[in-house]
Every structure is written in C-alpha cells, then in structure tokens.
Image (cartoon, rainbow, N blue to C red; front, side, top):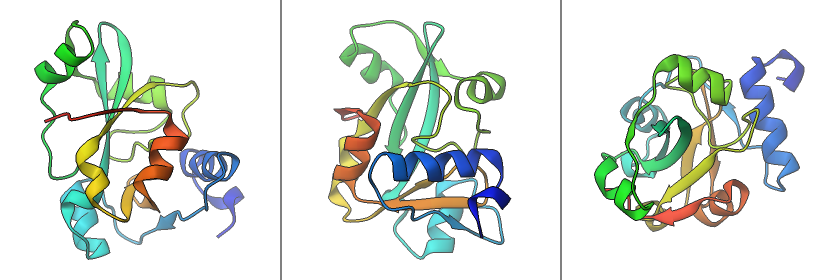
Length: 159
C-alpha cells in the first residue's frame, strides 16, 4: 500500500519515521487495535511490549506519555517528577487538536508540533516494542533505544 492511499495520520507517521532515520515498519491490520490488549492479541506479543501513546493535559499544555500497555500511569508520581502542576487525562478533542490523531490510535511521532514526551523506562525490558501508527488499524515496531532517540523523550518510571 502506498503512503498516498493511507489515511493522513498514518502517512504522517510513516514520513516521520523515515525522516527520523528509522525503518518504516507500519503495519495496517484488517481489524481495529485500539487498546493494548487488542494489539497484543493481534500481534501475539506480551501486552507489556505495547507502547501506549497517552496524551495528558498538564496545566493546559499537552504531555505525551509513552507507557507500557501493562502499566497504569500514576499522574501524581509523574507530576512530582516534573516539579508539580496538575496532570489529567486529555479530552478526545484536545488529543486530536495537538496530535492530529484520534484517541486509541495516537502514535509517538507524526504530530503537527513537537509535544513534550515521557518514556516509561519499564519498556526497555522488551527487545521489540509496538506503538500506534496514527489510527485504530495501524501499528509500528521499534526498539526502545530508537523510540527514545526519535521522540527525544525524557525517561521516567511512570507507575
């Protein structure tokens, strides 16, 4: 499938991956994979190797937390590590506005503007990670080190 025939957000992710110097490993599935559990079942991998791209509202500014699919983000712990401020789950409208992608398909890259990003250090335990690629039917694979490099994320224990 050519990039031209893919939905806009997925095409943006594919372009971002290659422009950042990693392989375009985007896979488009016939069925939706909007949750870590659904993605792990489709891929046949551990849910902990799924990288959830979660957008939070940190005092009105988007904050992207790349967390293991097996983790529940502790927003109080994260706020303390960031020096304070209220962190809350962003509305679907806030997510779409800042990422160009819908909740359940948000990718770590391919957004209109750079978003401050945190990377869950527990993901380093997996040799291969899978992350959303811009919509509910697409994911890409990547090594932790490459994900860290291309996102410029701050490494942090988020649970």
